[in-house]
Image (cartoon, rainbow, N blue to C red; front, top):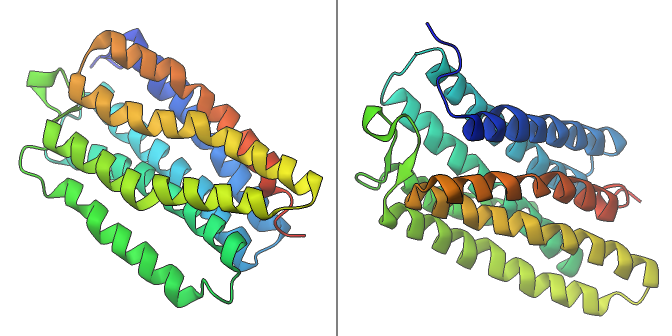
Length: 241
C-alpha cells in the first residue's frame, strides 16, 4: 500500500493549504462563538465552521484515495459534499450583510431559514446532474466536472449569493458614517476579493482539468488565509459589541 499516490501539487493543495485553512477557519469560528453567542455571531461563525467542514471532508476523501480506499460512489459523493459545503458557506456572509443592513427585526429567524432552505435545496442539484462529476481511474482519481455542473454551480452562487452580497455591501458602506466602521467594513470586503476569486476558480479548475490551471488555483488558494484574517479583524471581533 502506497500512502501518497498523488502529484506534489495536489498534495500541497490538499494536505497543506486546505487542511491548514480548515484548522484556521475552525479556530476563528469557535473564537467568535466563545466571545458571544447572539444570533449575528452564530451566523457569522457558521461561515467559518462550514468552510472548515468542507476542507476537512475534502482532506478525508483524498486521504482515502491515498490509502488506496478507492471506493465509488463514496469518493464521488464525498467530493460533491465538499463542493456543497464550500458553495453553501458564503450564504452566511450574505445573511450577515442583510442583518447589518436591515436589522434582525426585519431579517427574522423565519426569513433567515427560508433563505437558507431555498439555497440548500437548489444547491443540492449538484448531486443530481447526470455525469456531473467524475473521479475514478479514468481521471487518475482527480475530480473532473462536466460543463453543466460547473455552469450550474457558478450561476447559482453568483445569482443567489455574490451579486446580492455585493449590492448590500455597497449599501452598508454608504450608510456608515463612522470612519472606523467604514474602515472595518472595507477591510471585511477586501477579504471578499480573494475569497470570491477562489470560489470561481475551483469549479473552472475541475472542469478544465488542466494541471497548470490547477496549480494556479492552488496558489490563489493561499489567499484564503488572508480572507479568514480580514473577515475576522474586519468585523468578526466587533459584531458582538
